[in-house]
Image: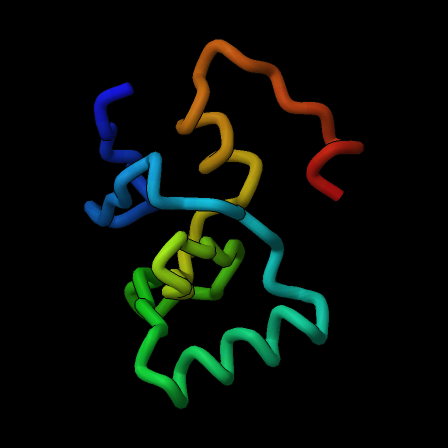
Length: 89
């Protein structure tokens, strides 16, 4: 499988086979994960100053913030697949 770039908003893209999770930023453990990544210089903010709506975790342990909904990003990874709300929540 060749690497594919996936748009995560505002002209930013990630390599599809490096992302291991796309999650909602609302839970307290995710906020702690984001704070730890910021302290360790592993945080990449791709929100362009807008509200964070999804957090992507990579295999290199980097944390990427995006202003695009997790459902939208997940559909961009596999456009032929329909994603149930139950799976994403």
